[in-house]
Length: 422
Image (cartoon, rainbow, N blue to C red; front, side, top):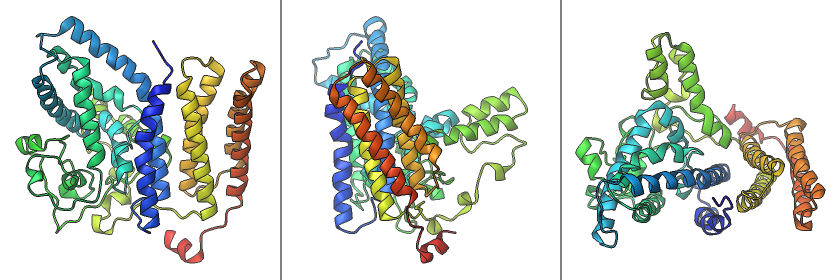
């Protein structure tokens, strides 16, 4: 099994991050505010984590799908017939609707899918803001296609069509599409799906076709009388990808601790997100943010100065370099550099998130970074790796240290902003 992902990184990374930064740059030059730096880099780092883990998880999913298709398919379909692609598209879209709906209905699945909904801006970056573990919860719904005799190649064609469509509908443009809204999941309808407005919650689950929502009673059009406000009722507490990917799991654990029976424990894990144990105090689960009316809701946007923003962007550049090297040589790396690189990647993503939170980060935070770099540097020197690996590691460690020094000497928020943020 090939665990080096050089080709996957080469083709996928530009497709993931290229459009995001092109659109963000255009947005910046036009002095618009739909692509904030904190939100954009958080989307990108979450996407990288998802991408890396998906490369690995998909090997198992593909192997399982192939096994079911080869050994247990119920009918033999002509895979060369163009109609097989139409069948696969319709079946995939139908299963996607229910997969998506289950992710809103089942607490454990919501812990995964919530990551996508925590975005409080709506742009292309949201389309790649996907949980680290989404492949672990997505695959089960689509295995019936293998039993139906739809080959892996045809299944992947239907899947990629869905992915491309999903990228395209995460936009605030195309305001009114009344005719298309009757058949397709349009940007307008998907904006509704991402809204925190009460009447918009849990609506429009469809992938490409919206007809399933019309059939099963979850259709809702965008209303001029109720402008869409993005995010979740319980606002996420951080820009850190690690916090965002784990914070609803903490809520599930709180529910379990409040449970007084096996039934309540099971409901804590699998019941809809709104469910609470009988003995639970709502104040422990829902902050004041949940009570804020949508028209009064403001996206989370702590103040950080330009100097600190530059350090965050430089750190993100280092994250991309580390990710590319790690995934390209994943199957060849010994345990020490593999573990150190993996930990360093997630640590730097977390570090950047805390910077965007406006947190005061002490020397121990940077010390962890330097220790991880030191372990990689030790391995490179001890095993006589290529000079570019040793030099590159030392350079990134030095850049990280300089970033920390600059961040530590950052100016505080201006007086007028400080008062507003308190």
